[in-house]
Amino acid sequence: MRRDALHKASTEISKNHAMIFMENLGVSRMSKSAKGNSEKHGVNVKAKSGLNKSILDAGWAMFATMLEYKQRWKGGMVEYVPAAYTSQRCSQCQYTSKANHVSQSKFECRACGYQVNADFNAALNILAAGHAVLTCEVDAIATTVKQEPVLAIR
Ligand SMILES: [Zn+2]
Image (cartoon, rainbow, N blue to C red):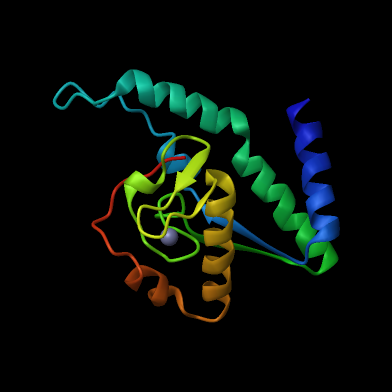
C-alpha cells in the first residue's frame, strides 16, 4: 500500500514539475540507533527510537528514488539541498532562530513577525536553497545564518 501511494504521489509531482528540490535529510544517518554501547550510553533513546520508526515508515528514501528516476525519464531534475536551518530560518527576512519554530505546524519569526505554516516556510527555504545550489551560491546560504548551529529534526 505504501509503495502504491508513493508511486502515485511521485508520478503526479513528476508530471507537473521539471525541477524538484528536496532536503538532504540523511535518512540512514538519522535512523542510526540511539542506544549507544556499553561504554557510552545513548541519550533520549526512547524519543529517538520513535523518531527512527517514523522516518523509516515515511519511506522517504523510496520516495526520493522514485522521484529521481521519473524525473530522468521526463528530462526533469531532482536537486538535494542542505537541510540545516530550513525549519528555523524565516523565508522572508532570513532571521534564523530555534524560537521561530513555535510548534510542529506553526512558524512565527521573532525578527519580522512573519507567521505561516511551518512546513510552508521550510518549503520556501528549500526552494531558495535549491536556486542557490543551481547558481553555485551554496556558501551564501551558510553566511545568512545569524546564530550558532542547533540540531533541527522536523
Ligand atoms: Zn522574518
